[in-house]
Image 1 (tube, rainbow, N blue to C red):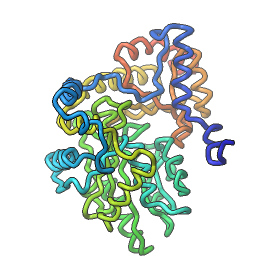
Image 2: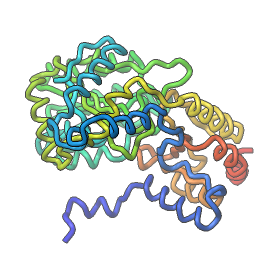
Image 3: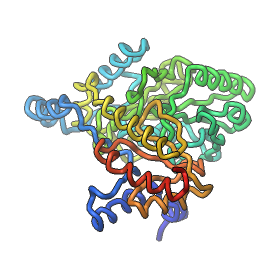
Image 4: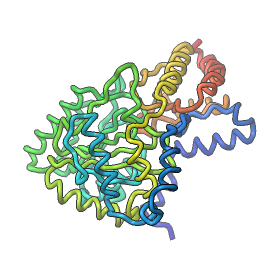
Length: 396
């Protein structure tokens, strides 16, 4: 009864979700306060007050049929115009409503643009470590994911290997900055070099290659690090954005695509993406949340809270003898496993009620990911457990 496409997905169910469920099981046994779950990127910082105020005001003041009814598949025109204006103020762009398509979060946005551009057998290149679902999204449309091996020195992309993996079948490249799982922000130099490589390859193969920038963590950056806005580097860029992290709204599933006028056949791409939004079954992004976003584009979560968590966890792990790159953005820390098989390390951590995600889930074995979007108090309570784990491995 189950399709051939779904069978391997059942067998290889997401380790992130499996760890999350394991956390619930351990919490029932030992009490949630005694389980240190760093598995899921579920924001602990509450949504800004403006979000609640906007929801209540919209429900009270705006016409119910308008708020809850159908609209253009691309989304409410005034909301799309507001999103474009916000981006223009912040990044010096010249977008308009015809460049913005409201989506059911960044995941749906990625599926929309991949459905729009991929033919069977087309290739999509991405850099390890990468968000585990990229492979599934590409396979949804009979594409093939080609992975650039990780550069574990600093987790900036290995651009020599990248250039080798681009072929005449390459239709798109997916980047994610700030990165999940490493927290690394791609530098200005990195983005310029990526753009240069893509321009050369387009000329060599007489093709068009889309650069898809997956950006749910754009606003989460620390120590004065600036996250470059990618459309200024390469004209065939598509932005996939989500408010899940920037406004702590992961369950509301609201985001957008940016398809710039500079993109090859931009008007046709936008039209096809609007249809893809419909035929994928989304039809349109949630109407109420579109109205809310239109009013909350200048709202911000407390990034300082994540920064406190980052410093506490990073310093605590380093003091225990663990090796990790200090994150520049997002709310994940990528730590080197003290043993070659990081899955075995994850099992040792579980014995101390610590839940982390194996790096092989992100195509980067030998590492584990910790999501520090938890409470500060949980990180404080977890440090004795990490010290015990470090002692088990003779690190301290």
